[in-house]
Length: 220
Image (tube, rainbow, N blue to C red; front, side, top):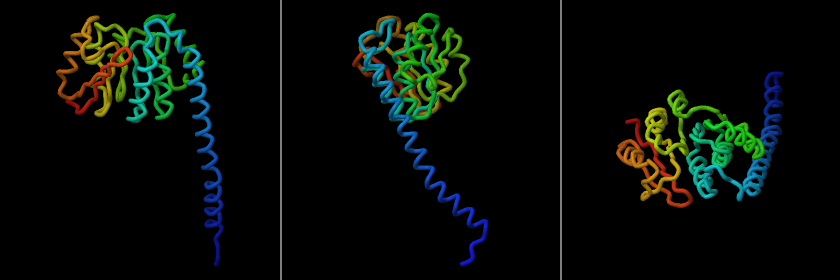
């Protein structure tokens, strides 16, 4: 059989791909495994020292599961605090290839969160912004497929109104310190508003600090 120079080159290229691709995949898997170890160690070391209105670990696991199970990539967090929830969200986004935009108005908390993201090994998955979320939420561009709101409760409805139109169908808007029965802290307006939206389906997780989970089912 006569083999041309061009076909010979293609054969060599194919053989090289067979050798290189498994190696790259193994390296990627190894890197992911190392990140998992780093994040788990960080969360374990910090488990009793989270203050400044951070979420409990059970809520962090809930957010992680929602993101990974739905393959979300474009996440927004309102209220970084010192980064506990952000670490969980960014860790989940490391699995999906996504990135988190997180907003905090307090400079001390913002700086501490930046340090925590670095220590947890998730900085590359986070765009941490020192800003007023009241204004930034209006300026953000879509598409957004995941939101976690954990800032001023009296503004929850406004955050939802600003971000919901920019969310993809199938996306999820979550909010902290809300259960089906908890209506204090100025969140009654928010609960009534989200439950009235015909293009969102809302449920509540009553474990931990309480989280409302609203999936966007249609554009309008």
